[in-house]
Amino acid sequence: MRRLAVLLLSILTAVLGVALLLLHSVPQAVAQGAGMMGGMGGSMPRHHEFMMGRVPEPYASMTNPLPDTAEVIARGRAVFEESCASCHGREGLGNGEAGRELSPPPANLAMLTRMPMMRNDRYLFWAISEGGVPFGTQMPAFKDMLSAEEIWSVVRFLQAEEAPK
Image (tube, rainbow, N blue to C red; front, top):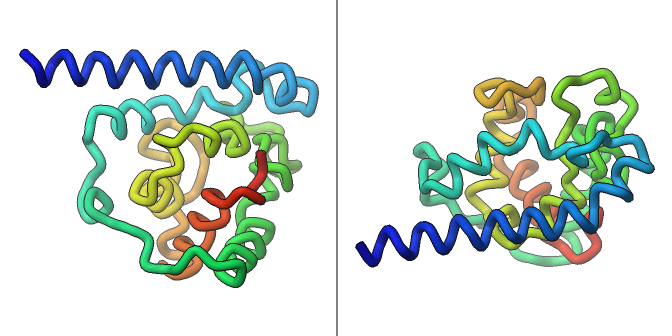
């Protein structure tokens, strides 16, 4: 019973956090072309899986092996700009040129990475590696296009203070 109460409290906290972020971020994202959900709509199924503890192996126990250094973050920024910004936009708002016609729109990473739960190593590595097709989005799986080190560097960049916010 205690586990159920803790789980329900965790879910309620996450939902309230998302609601507060939407209240703050959606007007800015909409003004910059990201759509009403701020690009979050297609990300919700993966968030649900993560919140329910259903991250698949091998991702479930992963932690970023790269140090949190300016060099790694700069490398992550470069990989993001080359491989991600065309859809997610340079500021991570989900409004990149290549993503404008996608439905659902690309995720608003600037908003999502403000949420501590979504800044998680295994969540970000899983999302980038496997892409969004299993969750109804058109984000490609990058596990065959980027090295693990490149993906981890993007994770460090998204977690960094200078990441798109």
